[in-house]
Length: 69
Image (cartoon, rainbow, N blue to C red; front, side, top):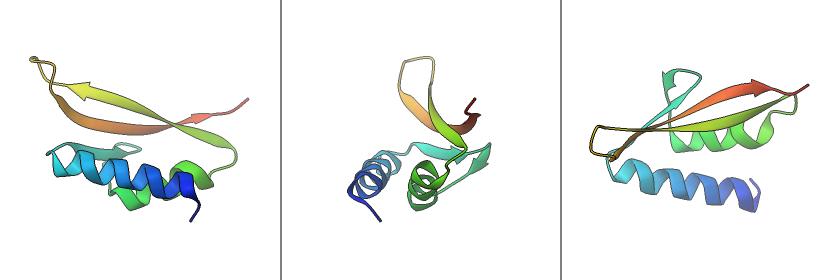
């Protein structure tokens, strides 16, 4: 695990501690799984989509794969 992966996992754990749900490719996921996929995949990039409720409170972070050219 490199420093960037550790830092992302730490930030995602903080977010989930605030009641925010995490998704990877449309399925509920853990901070560990997202951090691992985010830095391992070589032919694609995972892009976060931050979902808020009507009051602007963050409720979900969805990581979806975006293919590289």
